[in-house]
Image (cartoon, rainbow, N blue to C red; front, top):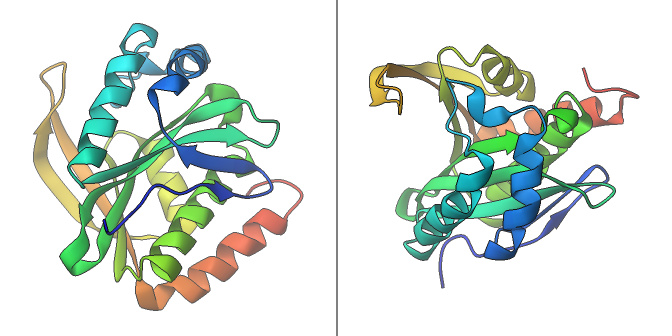
Length: 198
């Protein structure tokens, strides 16, 4: 049995379901909301590349290094994608990443709840010792969102990757370790109980 098996996670604001090729049309429509692929510091597929991206994620799932999810909002509308990636089963570590949400779903409780569900599953079911988050140095919105979750910055990997446009990516690394999860969970529950996300 694989370390991380496909699973559906349900909350009040979001549902995470196993990604499949059947999500292609909905994902292509969602990525048009905000023209997300035009953000130079992200790797979000253009509408005509969504099928290839789903295939890439499912191939990595087959190899045991990724567990991809489709994200739906409370009304059942396709909102984006997220994953457990860089799965390290022997050391019980995962990274939550390759996440994007349609523009109309951003700055809503959806992201907080998705992260809350993914973290709970990682620490409470998979018995992870740490969960990582990584983002581009210039993705200030993502860095702020990760810090708001309660993750701590571990450092910056300089010249970590070559981006599709040829620029060099500095990657900011954050993590939450198992001993921090109870406090982080309380923090996220508090955020989700507010009338509006902080």
